[in-house]
Image (cartoon, rainbow, N blue to C red):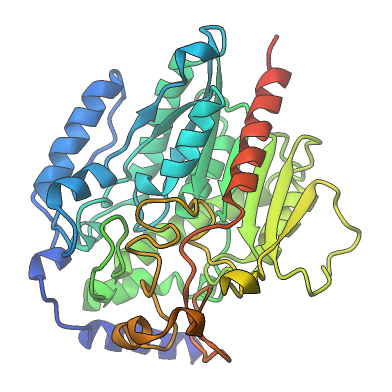
Length: 407
């Protein structure tokens, strides 16, 4: 009965979605990204720029040309001072409904550490929510394979990493037994298992027959969709199923892993991540960083010395906890950072957008997403006050394992 009730709720949501102020946002565009061999990265960038420019439906408040640039993939090459002998690189894969913009801050930091960075744009992303109606997991997987193979041709030591869905896709590739092998895996809040929704993902393709969208939200963010399609749930469910199957087939996973997550994540199941890290990713160079309220004791025993904790309760900054989306964002980020256009009231909890904007600064706190009332007014946190520590740890992980892999 619970499953049937959930299905009915999803159908009702699709039927009562908010009216679209820009109908084109919720319809597929005239073109679609495909997975093709990356023989020339510059040519790939030109092709994707044409695709984004063709398909993008701009949101209000930002120049269209700027929105096109923000959603494009990119490559950052280390400075000449790094020397030609240092040929280490990483491919970074963005999350569901997201764009390569999410890695802007980390990519700049890693390039300064003499690490070449490449990103890609997953099919259905970076243009309009309607393009997610026809996106397919097998295309995402093939895109990751093609891009990592191209990176491995360009550098001596290639790493792979991702955020959320991208973390799951990167993990899936790293655990596969085909193609060039990565020296290590970076997974930031990876979608290995979802909080509360994993038992219902099978319903998404059934619900898809009754409509395209779970909910059509007003689109205020130029680099991430707020509206969610039924198809997105179906495709991420396929990726998660593959990940869990691969993990269950191996008692231990030999690849070095850097894993990061927040205890308050409303999307990702932290307990599952911790169990996999402790029991399967046993490489001595593996590291995990958890952002949590340090006022509360950590219940896992015995303590794994490879896990580092950073405090996510920062009352001096009106921060109750860290959100899923905040982890990779610097306080200086041009869109999500402290005082930036999207930092305040992008996703208020149980509060209208207008009511949130009318609050005084000291009245508004920042947290993960919640569907229940909190003792204070909260909006979703969009940046990571500990970004420098996270980026530093990722850089150290890559360089340490690149050195270990040098003949």
